[in-house]
Image (cartoon, rainbow, N blue to C red):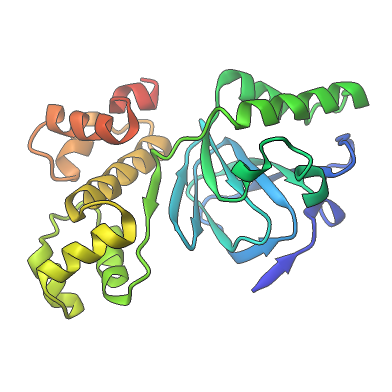
Length: 265
């Protein structure tokens, strides 16, 4: 497993001030690029000011559209898939700096953050070349304050570790628009439907039906984030829902918002 050096040592727009222990990196990536599994000695907040990415950790897949960011703790293996052209803005935090945070214990696991307008402006403001040291330090403090109030698991799809259950999950994720029957899946992975159902519940804390629903909603979010012309009706049909209201109800159950509200249409 690659342990990468702080990117600021290699590629950084060096006119960005940062306080001791915090590093700011701005970089653009093209659609379709994959950053293979790796880890950092620092914790990081990864934010795409434009574009959608998918972050995979041992716990699962985190879909990160532009109104989300992802917190990745130090030493955690993760991979990134760029689903659109990305304008990435990343904050790296040295562990000694981070451990002085009052809420450090809440930052030892990965999570997705819903980026409010205030958090968005604070992150982008850090990359303003006109910043003074005082302004930069205040913006970092504001980011940390907002970070603790913005955790959001709506775009997370947990991945099981048990081999049979993992294979079944990957079959669904490879074709989230399909109508996957647990009996058929169980036969494909060499177990019974009863055992597979139990494994999904134990490994993901979701029933098989709820897990599949989350996978379909994640696929819908990905499409909404990367295709501005897709309609809710098209998505409902492609994902196998009987009607737009049924799809909207399932979407709201997972994300707390309707597809239209999520897409900002």
